Image (cartoon, rainbow, N blue to C red; front, side, top):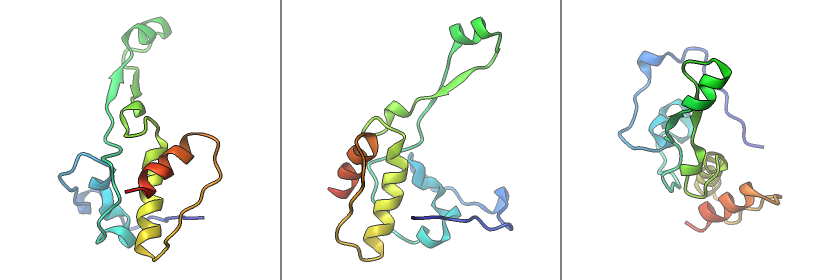
Length: 114
């Protein structure tokens, strides 16, 4: 299992954001990965889409959905697949395996093939 714990001393004003339109613009809050070139297919940085009709029906003035279908394989799982594949390659693993009957398997296959 891959687990990251953010430092208690992490403050927004200290975070440097890269100029890339992917989740990797936030690489600096992952110190162990900050100097690595990511395995990326430009995942993340997906738009918020206003759901006006549903918002009106539910009496919410500002209801938005995060459109994760814009990720490379159409799934929010691409974010984790990019992170896990980057970590695996950079720490010397030559093979990646995942037990999945759905989106995670597709995402890992896409990123591992890169």
